[in-house]
Length: 409
Image (cartoon, rainbow, N blue to C red):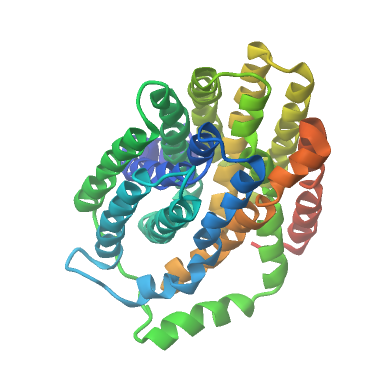
């Protein structure tokens, strides 16, 4: 057996990647607690589609997190270390924010609901910053692809529990109780933080706040094609993200029950997500990052077109299962390559800040492009909307081809 295969097997069987599955899980869980599950709660309370679409703005912290990320590079808040110290603090406040969200009233106090959701998003985004930095610093460059795939699988598991599990539970208990259960589940993140080793601190880390704020951006924007790389990150998953933002109202609108959505969309598709994440990590090693991004990006576009086909089929469980399985498979592969690409661009002196900058651009479609999706559906219909989401992914793939010829990495 050749050395690369042996090295990969050693990494897979060492148990070191389990930490990144668990951190991925507690990062993925809060995302949909202010996303699809909150949409279902608002829909159940009689909130109109336009307002549900506008609630995408509560995700703004995911696009602005580079503004406070330098604090996580500069300061060490406790004896646990720079990364674990911040994680413990952020996770505690995140749990409290989820409890506050649980006691909100969507129908009578939408502004209070929005503020509580915004707090959850802020501390969830802060957790993402530190977890991304932890993963980049605790794994070698060669392990980033596999680390990203394990993180993606954990992330999707968290999303599965928040949305699919949450929807199923909401048929049995109140949405308030569902959110309190989810706050309790987040205690797993605290345990992972306390039991995980602190990564070694790189030489040359910022010694002043000014250095932590200024130097990461100066170092990044001195690179060739720095702005085009950010544009690619913005565009690569924009169609997939816009489509995903309205899938829960879509499923409900064409006649599927909440239990069917929770079972078929989430639970049935999870095996495809696991396979996609693992397959993506392995194929990145064989194909290289650019070929993997291109191949997985094409598959993502085709999977989005599947929703347009489902809009024509209507309430068809077989069609729903096929579309979801393919979407989860391609989504897991694409996200693993996407995350590994961004990790390869960071300087370990400023991991938290530079990774936050890159992932902030990744999050822009989730907020800015997703916000008008409710209006788009009302004017275009479901078929036209999903067809638009398929076509809007093409500019990102064209830019990727241009960057590959320029050999960005």
